Length: 161
Image (cartoon, rainbow, N blue to C red; front, side):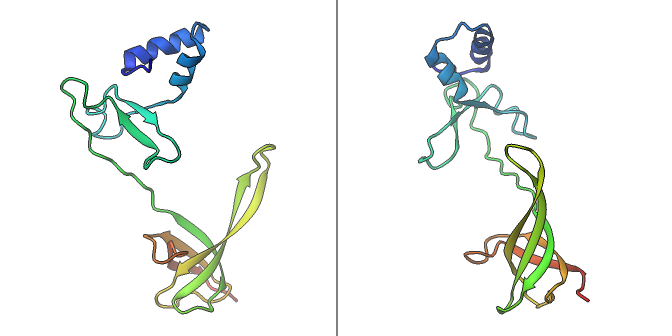
């Protein structure tokens, strides 16, 4: 059986550390994700267990056992997203109100952890045509403006020579 509250899960985790769980209990335990405190939501979600749903379901996390607990109402859905800021070089301004910006970043190699320089090209909305070829610019994330545009050109940091 799948544990439904925090105390049952804590007990199963202790049993797991001692090696006293069956394969099925270990499997059910590994499928669970627990809430930490999200400002204002922590009280409503106290002891709630989130189940991972399948890849084909609508959402990746689904509340489990919230309505069944006595005195606990459903918590409000909280969506927190950080605004993405990127900096890069304009490599194309061929289209109207659109620029292509090349962004370099250092990412660790998945196996060897050496930092490798990776380059990605972003299609950026440039309403006033501020970005010229070779300019170093700052991009700001926004809502999807087209199939490929997810950023707007916020400012030109350094102009090309």
